[in-house]
Image 1 (cartoon, rainbow, N blue to C red):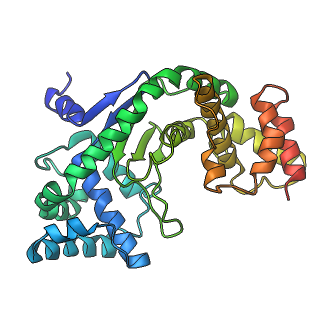
Image 2: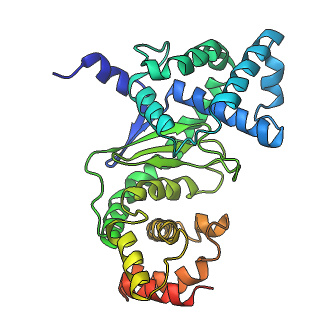
Length: 321
């Protein structure tokens, strides 16, 4: 029997859907990311994410309350990577699937202390920060959803063919957060994904500055279920070709492929809809920039079905400098 209360709770934060995705804007998850982002930025750069209007709107007591929550995150959670940490992944799944405003309920023991700290600052977040964050999340989706619906069938089909992998049958959950993932290595506010099942976190802050950027990154994150480092058609081909050449596969070669394959497919589909001159995320942001000339020379012919993936990979490994 389906738990109707849990079903209603799970869908309370749903703000849209398409054939292949369901989109959510969860209050507690956004609060969690907000505190993590502010804690990390203050620790690394000594710069706050808060704008003057937000700082001025808080009383001394409210500012003290926020400072304590940020200090808690700095001392407790900054060593836990939002994408890689087992704790953070479990916390993400639990809080987005079962919790919504106005209160946290049925908190597992492993999350209790963490949630108590969120509760302390919840009223402050709800009053000063959440309205802006929620509007931004909804605007990012409203801006991109019509285009997602137009191209998703073709993008999914092409990526499945290129990767020889099945797209997830159930709709992929996408939680939109004002802040997504920032690390000490890169202060860029970026989406991230966990798989089995695929669960994407997309950011709304700074993500829609360039038309097509949010769209490309959504399909990039969804492609993590299709391409992995050591298994599947793409990862396996890279390993097999490197072994046959008596060489090591290049560092993060699979991830460079993921960026390029998903980026080119989305770019092609946007051009089919009359949206020209889109520049790939990896090119615009110099991600895997050392790979790009070789991807353009050798992997693009694979995308155009002119050579095999094995031949393209062999050429990249032999020519990469």
